[in-house]
Image (tube, rainbow, N blue to C red; front, side, top):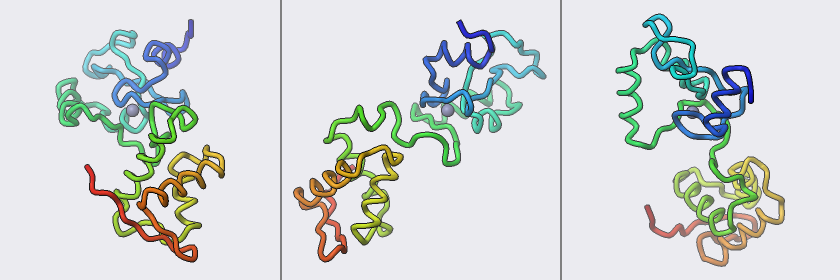
Length: 169
Ligand SMILES: [Zn+2]
């Protein structure tokens, strides 16, 4: 059993941030006192959670009531305000995703980019690679691009890419 409070809390939370439930490396984690020490809270595990550092600094000395408001305001889609923090693709690592899941992530990402979509094959390749934190082998990236082509979502003409994204949510 881990003995440091942060390690113990992370262990109890399955390695996930208490609030956003993203995978949280110990280096990015901090201990949040639900009731701040200054408000009479204790250091015990019953008053502490491990969460993203960014959120901990935001919650700072808010009262428990204010914190609850912040959390409820997220309507169940809680995301810690990490700036370029760990992992956009959360829950599953790319190697655990199916090809279909990866393809829909790419389509969703391209849709989100609007007019700022990559215009060349080279930038599209690096955009897709970055989307999976550069963990995808080159041939996987290439296979995603050929699937996009096969489905008529993109067309490539002398290394220039144009888009025909399907309508969707
Ligand atoms: Zn978090």
